[in-house]
Length: 200
Image (cartoon, rainbow, N blue to C red; front, side, top):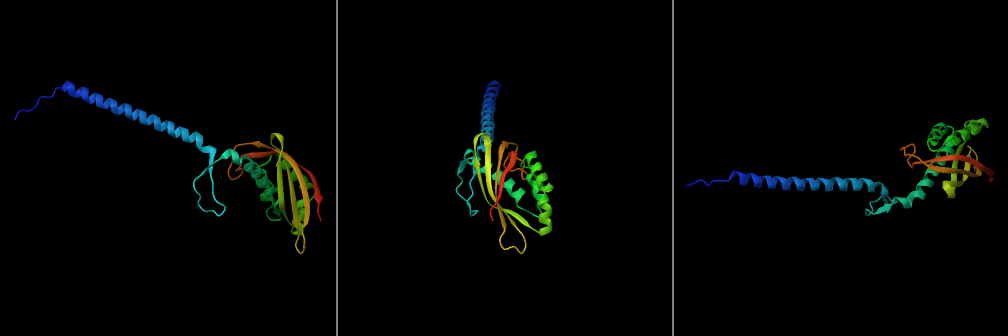
């Protein structure tokens, strides 16, 4: 039985064409993969996933993050207010420390004012607990806001707490988020208490 003669040049040419096609196809697939990864990376921050109030799984629907900006801004102010005003004799230093991550020097200045009038010393002496009952935040132009809150101070053996209506103003600026110290990525500036009126 005779062995068939193979033209080496024809075989090399065929192998070269096969290799060239494989390289070109691999290059195209790689470029498409890189483009898809880049596209997903650029788009992923525009969306958040929704979770039900009962912590149950929901259909994975994408919600435009832009629609939640108002919630994020109010959430930042509410978080600061809860740190600064929800205090007692045991936690007030830690609470104030946490609050200062969300506000500029106006927060430090307000804290010093409270120290100078002996607010925290009275709380320690009387074992009082201060907390926010209700809060309402309204935004104006250029990220300026007005906060209206009902602040209560409860003392031991006191049937009804002493309640104040606090009206304050400030402005929000965008900063880099720093979880968990500043999870929302906003900073309060120029904060000041406009009025504080006793309700009862």
